[in-house]
Image 1 (cartoon, one colour):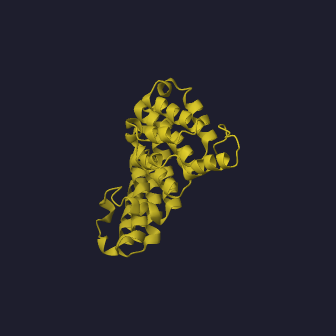
Image 2: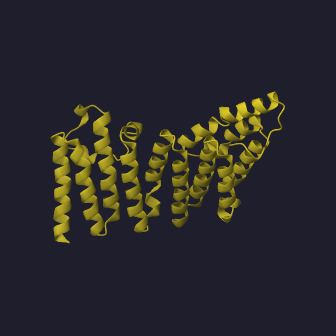
Image 3: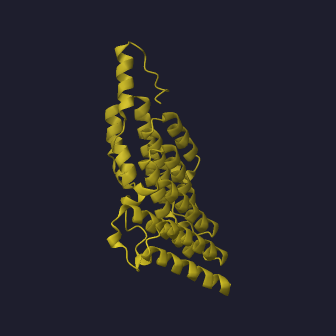
Length: 258
């Protein structure tokens, strides 16, 4: 145990030195190793923080003026660089954020993963990987349920449905809704009622109703990244499909809105 303590301290010191020397490709590696050592000692929170810190430092070095870096860089706030971090090395960021989530969940600390899941979802949305974004929203819902954050659970479910709709996958959105309704907490929630209205409007190809629901208070209380998607519903493809069907005298297949 004592050796582990000394080793992780050496790893963090090495990371700080790498920052001073501008050896950015080694910073994340040192923090990854420190995270592994923290985890071996059963300290999941510092392990998770070390992984996330690696993302912040390594990615910030690519996107922000190096004049901002000092020997105190390791004490910067975890999310201090905002969207700039999400644009630099998104795949590596998601991998480390996901590892950090796993560390916390394995230790039964699901109440600490919200910011990580929010960051992962945001990255996937920016990359237009909507299926991945929805998958992590559903995983976030499961984590919320485990820590009895039921309101967050319902918001995550509704968010996943909106992401599927934005990705032009009505069938998957409907399947997601039906699956979520097997959970009593969601079935009786405002988020479930909102999703039901949204899906009904899609079935009827009612653009005005879709836009009205998208501006409802229930959706306005979701994360901003989801609100932005909802405000753009329905997509151009859906409107164009209606127009093409009418123009050619074809009956609109309300069950095929993908």
